Image (cartoon, rainbow, N blue to C red; front, side, top):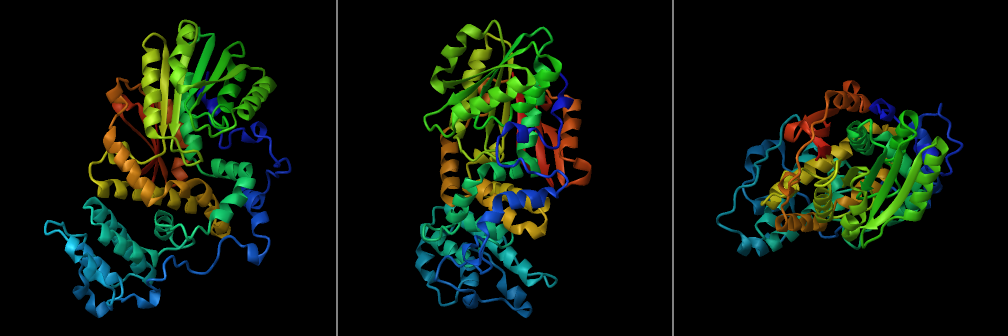
Length: 487
């Protein structure tokens, strides 16, 4: 089976997902079309406007008029050398900073020194200052300086906005308080039009398409010509978005092949398996492929697969943290799935594909929270910047709506710290559980480069991992999605 069949700029989600999009005009600008699909109904009147043009102020403690702005003549006098100096400089000089002095450690390392550049605009100055505050926050969290953290967060709250520059929007989601959940209405409205929003996000941005295309290519290339049955076990089946291209490839190359797709059921059952099964089955029937869709609990996976080891080629697929995946499954669950897959493949032929849309595993497993925080910040900055590049400026509200639905839920200071703590409890790499890398070929690499239009976009495709078994989607050099193959 040739993976060229998978290489489409827009996979057949229209025919797979039955929605209210039958009137879609392919000659109409794609962005404007998607925008009207899921956002026109939620911006019909000024009083219902979801994205206010007014600046956002989360806390009444500090206002912009209270910030002491440095004059250019006094640049040298504003060098910042310690965490509390940062807060003293950015907050009102009458703020009671002395309350945190008792927590200051004599062994504290200096924070990055920043002094304004004469060529910088006021927006550049504000952006840089917010970046320094975020670094100071991460350092204070690392050192356990609770009171200092509170002061820094109060300073940050005065410089963030849900409609500001990238860093402001990220910080807005990081430190959004329970009293300021202004985007909840937006989320509710988007969920009512979820299929339209999902289609827009999946088709416009390459994150999910790259991960699915790469994994599907690996699976199809691994299937021998004498194989009569292929069994795919999917860790997070969801709405089954990944598999229509595989079904179509089977239909065009080997209709005699029997295909089984098994979704893993976890305790937090977060998708409608019955509906997914119906849609996949209908799609397979329409193209003439023999398909069976099943569901199995993770704890019963080994037992269920025992009787099928001699007759089927097995493909275990695990995708975690991809931006389009609204449900968030724990990495520890994914590792357990991969361990079981390794155990099952000990007695059978098959392959494992792993797509990771979260931050680099080295950072997740970092012993220093500041390093972990900085890695996450870089990761989400790349995602936000790529979304700004991918949607025209005149559709800003549509972009922010998509950010709110698909990216913002993963940005939280509390969840980041919890994830880092969990990573310290169980630091396990795929190589560490006994898996061996399966090299990806140059053909798949070239196809992925074509998929993301590498020559004309800031996206790039890299090869890494063990024996070249990992393909990486990068945004201006920053990894955003990684897919690896294992046996």
